[in-house]
Length: 476
Image 1 (spheres, helix red, strand yellow):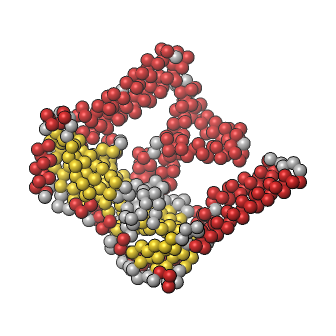
Image 2 (cartoon, one colour):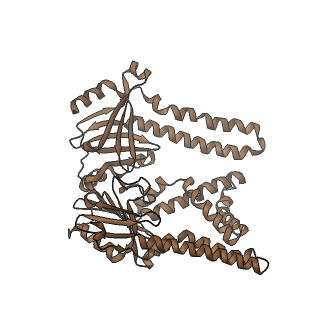
């Protein structure tokens, strides 16, 4: 019975992680005494008493959470007990675990702690089944147990230039803005709004100074914000994926990455939902591809896309993909998109061309902003044309195929062409749909459903219906 087992506590660093938000609130309550300056003895006593009550409640709750989280392991399962107001206990069999993530950052390393998270198909799509901090020795012992003393060379080690290229492909100004805005707001609260604004102006002024000779100051400011935001996004992405190494040890694929914060993800090969080869339009021009895996637990680690191979040549990607996952790229039968279906793929980008046209018309209604609107019009026009070119690339490259091991689905997702290698046992459903127009033209859309972190639907549009029916019947 679980209650007869000897349960252990996790690393005390868990207390600090539980208090990471509360500490800021405690500091704000202390600063209140200096900023608000209560008048009179009763106001001072009342304010201090309220803050002391708040601190006592937070500390009591945090210590209770830490004290009530206990674990125990045996030869087959890990047993967990947790909860303050509602006690919970559950058991996770080892054979059900799909992903184990070891994570440490600068602060946890100072305390000799490492976060271990495990996930199973029964867990939530937002949280791990179990996550807490343990000592570095315990984390090392668990890794050694997973390795089972198997000696294996590094199957793949990324080049720094490959990570830089991937960071450039994946980064976008929106991610940078999402990072900048909270930082500026918090800096404004601590240092003062004027100091924070000066920091922002100084970071943007240098690009503006050079651009203002070619475009208007307003347009130069917009361009600078886009450039700075994209640069910050690229730096964050680079730090997250630098030093990428991928191993294959026994039934596990191990992904190690990160500089300031380091993570090691152990994934069962038998639990892989699909192997994905990604290629954007720019990567196509540079003859590069990347490879990732979809699995339970992938996606909960910030920024994780399950990448196992960064930007490499197609021949290297195929060879190393087979070495790591055991899945070959050979195709037995392929069905490509029907000829004359290009309009279905480029319809939305063509409609989007009305947007820059509207901007150009707006110049005559707002002559005082003509240069700024012109700049924005060219930016939007470039984005729409790039979208149009990508859809043409997707039309020429989308298909569905079979191999001896899996179903191969090549389709686009946003601005990335993704080829899914889905083992037959992991296919949840194959759905063939036809619109009224497709019935007359003999075409159809094929939707393939699989389950990884959440349900994923791969769709290939405008395939010949007769060929799809024939290949599905022959496949059984």
